[in-house]
Image (cartoon, rainbow, N blue to C red; front, top):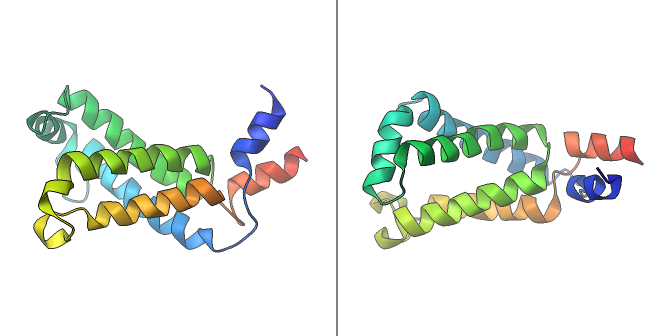
Length: 148
């Protein structure tokens, strides 16, 4: 593979300002993914999440639960590590747009009504990371430095 493509994917600023974004978003996404995949933290697992996804028109439910759960779980881990942060954040941002439109938008802004404010905050975090990259103290930065 062309090393210039790899360099562009891993390119990041050298600020520490993205570190809290990566860590917090990573923990949140991986925990939500674990709910969907493994029924951890009070989640419903693939079966229950799949049934719910079917009920809101995101079918086939089991496959969608597997895809979304995997995206959130493994994407969260990648954010924590700061590895492939830009593409991971872009995929997670798309996931949040779908969550906002298909699940939360009709309920208004506020979380107390199952609104979209939490998903919107996660969308903002992932967009910021997709734009800026992982930052200092990330696997992306470490790999980028070695490619120079």
